[in-house]
Picture (spheres, rainbow, N blue to C red):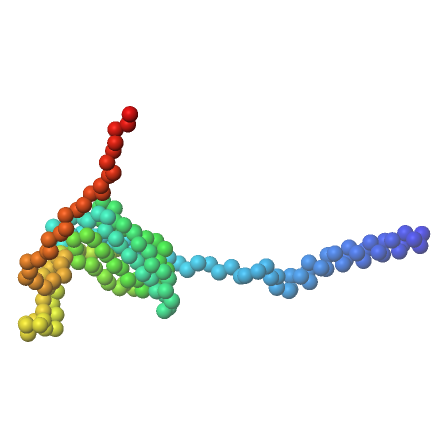
Length: 184
């Protein structure tokens, strides 16, 4: 009987110990590596690229998004416009400053900074043809420097072509072969 009693006490003690361990572990913080940090809220930005002179969309224009949040660079992304002239992106953190740059063939580059605080932002860009570049510098003749619009070729000084005098070249000699004798 004594043996049964000690056996029961041991069983009761082990049961109490097993039920108390989870209660003790709830008070202690459990560490499983890094603490999960939810990603920041993002905004959707849609850019529509149009020709200023007729309002038609420009397809295949490069739209570059460069975002900064609290002075930290969030990276740059480039998206091409579709046939309707639209490019959209939805990974820009809300509250960030975004520089939107649009590059299209045959048009002047557009760049502007926007502060994105709303969940959806629509931007319309009207592209213009390249204009004449103005400068406060002067060229070599004392006139104000200016360049014509469009692609410029470098200015190369014109030199007068001098006639080339060439020495008469020696006639080219052909290697002589030894005379052949008829075989008998």
